Amino acid sequence: MSSQTYSISDLARELDITTRAIRFYEEQGLLSPERRGLERIYTARDKVTLKLILRGKRIGFSLAECRELIELYDPTSGNQKQLNSMLAKITERRAQLEQQLLDIEQMQLELDTAEERCQMALQTLETQTAEVP
Image 1: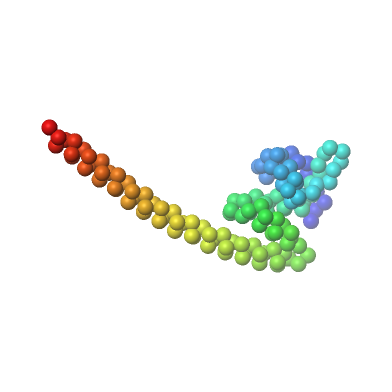
Image 2: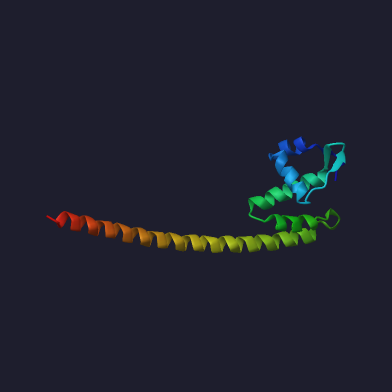
């Protein structure tokens, strides 16, 4: 890992997130930058952590799940535990999405049925109204 450091604005700009988001992750204990006076100094590891959080969020992981993966980060072992855990979480997330997709398809069918009933009821009303002298 390089010894490069970043300011909060450097990281925000580079990762296209707000400084407020970075401070939030710090408050949640996911980042612990050094302090020089009031300035936060972030390391390359902090940058990797932020990238993991952002990737996790994009694929629907909770902050707790992101924290688990971050805690498993160990470049000395090639991150084997982290990668295996990530694969398990991906499999779990994929199953959740497949179930949600089935739920959505079922809901669409129910909406189609409700819509047909409403349209038929309106047609019946229009026919009855037209027949009344």
